[in-house]
Every structure is written in C-alpha cells, then in structure tokens.
Image (cartoon, rainbow, N blue to C red; front, side):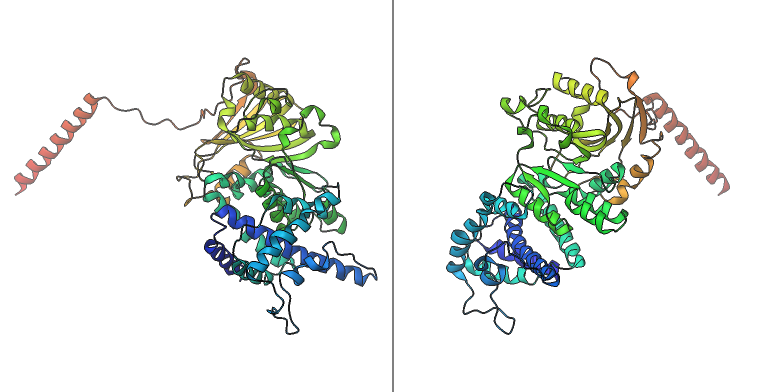
Amino acid sequence: MFEQTFKNIDDILFKDAGADSELDYIGQTSWILFLRYLDDLEKDKADEAELEGKDYTYIIAEKYRWPNWAMPKGEDGKLDHHIALTGPDLIDFVDNELFPYLAGFKAATDDPQTLEYKIGEIFSELSNKIKSGYNLREILDYADDLPFRSSKDKHELSHLYETKIKNMGNAGRNGGQYYTPRPLIRAMVAVTDPQIGETVYDGAAGSGGFLCEAYEYMLARMDQTTANLQTLQEATFYGKEKKNLAYVIGIMNMILHGIEAPHLIHTNTLSESIRDIQEKDRYHIILANPPFGGKERAEVQQNFDIKTGETAFLFMQHFIKSLKAGGRAAIVIKNTVLSNTDNASVALRKLLLESCNLHTILDMPGGTFTGAGVKTVVLFFQKGEPTKTIWFYQLNPGRNMGKTNPLNDKDMAEFIELQKTKPESEQSWNLKVANIDEKTFDLSVKNPNTPEEAPLRAPEEILAEMEALDKETADLLNSIKELV
C-alpha cells in the first residue's frame, strides 16, 4: 500500500508544471509528509495528556491543522467536498497563508532544538512548487491515507523514504551529494560501535543517513528501558546541514526512523571557527561523508589552522577538533587526501597522525558512489593517541560497481569481521608509521600483498613452444597413418 501511494504521488508531481526533477519530488513530498506526521504527533500528545487528566495546547492553530485545511471530513469520515479547498483556492491558501504562518514559528522561539523552531525553519526554507491545486488535492488525499502512529508503519515509511533519497542521488545533478550507500554507512557504524550514553555527530548531515543508521544500530543493541529510550531520543544524535533541501530531507528522514525531535541545525558548519569549539561542543562518535571538491572562500578558511580551499579538508579539521578525548570517528573522503603533496594535505596528514590513532583505512572501489567518478577511502580513527600502525583494507567485491551493481551488505561483511583483528591478507596489510616519509607523511594505498602476476614470456619462448606443439601434432598424425 505505502509503496503504491508514493508512486502515485510521484506520478502526480511528474504531471505538474512546477516539479521537474527527483529533487523537487522529494522536497514537495517532504513538506506534505511533515504536516501529516505533525497532525498525528499532536493527536498522540493530546491523547496522552487526556489520560493524565491534563490539557494539551496544540502547537498549530485550529485553522492550519491538517484536518481543517487539508482533509476536512464529513460525518461519514470522507472528504467533505463542500468545504475542502481545491484548485486555485487551495494553492492560494498554501502559498499565502499556510507557509507564511508556519514560517513565523522560527521568530517565535530562539531554541533550535524545539519542534516549533523546526517547523519555522522548514517552512522558511521550502516553498510550494506544486502549481495545480487539483494535483495538490490528489496528493493530500494520498498522504492522508498514510498511517504514522505505529512503529511498524514508521519503519515501512522510512524504507520508502530512503528509496526516494537514493533515487534522487541516482538522478544526478546535485542529488548525489545527499546519498551515501547504506551498506557502507552500516559498516562504519558497526566498526565505531556507538553505545547508549554516547553522543553521535555528523557535521555534514545531508539526508541524515549516518544518524538514522546509528539510531537503528543502538536501538537494536541496548536494554529497552524508558531511560535508555529517552536518552536515545533526546541526548544522542546531533547534526548540522547547510543546504535547504538537504536539511528538510534530513529532518523528515530522522522523524520517520523514530527520532521525533531531531537535533539537526540548519547552518554552515565551516562558518564556525574551530578555535571556539569547547569541551561541551565535543562528541563521542563522529560519522560523516563531507562534500569534497568544493572551494571555500578566504574568509571561511580563516576559521581553520590549516588554510585550504578544499571543503573536505576543512571538515576534517572540524571533526578532529569536535571529537572528545578517546572519541571515535569514521569519515568518507577522497583518496587523494592520502598522497597529495601540497602543504595543506601534508599538514592535515601530520595533524591526523599525531593527534589521533588512525587505525584503519578502508579503500573503496570506483563506482561506489553513483554518478561520482572520484575514488574514496574511509578513515577510522580515535582521538588522543598518536598513530603507530595503520591497517589498510582494499575492498574488492569481484564485480564492477555502479547503478545496476550497487554496494551491498555482503560486500562489507569480511571487512567488518577482519577489522577486529587486522590481519594480513591479499586485500589487507599493516603499515608502521615509523616507516613512512617524515616530510610528506604519504599514506598512498599500495598493497604489498597483491598476488604477483605471471611474467610475460619472451617471443622466442612462445615460438619454441609453438614449434614443439607442431612437432607433437605431426608425430601424432604419422602414428595414426601407420596404424591405418
């Protein structure tokens, strides 16, 4: 049912003049789903308050609640077409009344962790792109049928939403930046092994995939007590995201996965000086795939000790500074960070090796990221002790990676298992930091355990073998003639 509903909504958006890409589809679906979810959330809170003999004050004013503007129903429980807005009237209400009202919540509170602030921020950044009120009416009808109240329903909806995020990445353009293959994220989470009571942070949160997978991992492994569930909901997951659409998608994705009031802040992480990061701002676990290839302005670079225009290198400095002592991190980054000879790259490697134990480097095959030709590695490190030995693992799934052959959990299984003991194999090896060049700190991926290929034979050797084979054939034919 859910999958067909999502498909029906996409089909309507495809016909509408205002939505022309997967990016638009998920953006428009997101604000509608958010308001649908918000209605069920407020109903639940009102029911809980009634059971406790208390009054509940709705966040959303009567006029702007889902049952009053989106789905006014008659006594028969069906949409009342006499009072339901549709056509141009519906678009006029959404654009000129609903969105401005909801956007106003941002000015009503200074606390970015409140649901009111999240509402205001989402509707300050997004706009309704659906041009036809008749199309919007159809979409609202479909959205109203989606149940949000049970864990099972949310779980299924979250998987469908993840599929939409993946499709947005596959669509190319700037959609790919929002999607890191979930099998890779799950492997990164498994190796860092976050525990209840620890905080998890992603300063380039995108669609919230790292935080959602960490939530699933911790929820499945912790004692299911009220205190633990409250800790998981309220004091575990933190993120920052710069781009409008990604921020909204991240909020919605985390909500669907079960994190009701996500600590996701809409801000440019790199605009914050790392010199201002205090102990209270640090985290136990950092999981991220920061954007790479970007060029940051000079004023942004002033926030960092190692000046560089490369976005990912600035994020690396932010992550190192944001880790608590003993904190663990897993960061996806392009593989050139290991070998570039420019001053910033060398300084960054030196900083990482001297301030953290870079214990594992996972070398990913080309094609891991759909639509991105860049080769990547994952850096696993723990803050507080210098690096002595690095274990490299070169992932080889035995096939060409791409849209039709994406990464899967089975591909990652051996890495997760071997990482515990860090053995030498055809795909893995250990590098002692004492043996690397102290001037360049070069950490290039050079597998010393690759099986040697048989050397090419000399032409003379090949000709001699051909002559020998010809002689054998001639002798065999002569033997057959003598028998005849």
